[in-house]
Image (cartoon, rainbow, N blue to C red; front, side, top):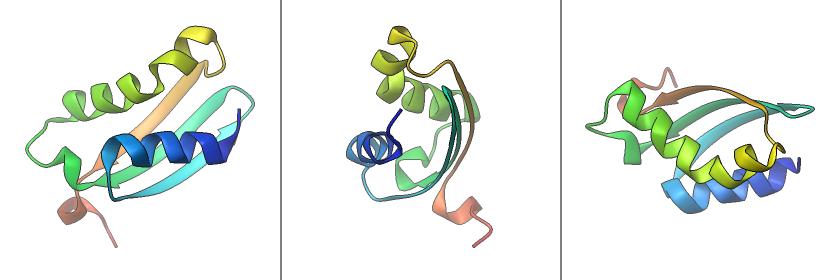
Length: 77
């Protein structure tokens, strides 16, 4: 799995966002900070990310995803 491709895929779908990405084999750890999450609960935020990664999950390229999805106002930075 190419980390740059995953990063491009997520930024294209979420717009301006901050990403922390860790790839270990076919497992993906994400921390995403995006204004696109404003007004959405945790489940809806995760569903957005899963939709963007859907083809790669279905193909088995990505087996497991652990994520934390935050709005800019929720970000500790």
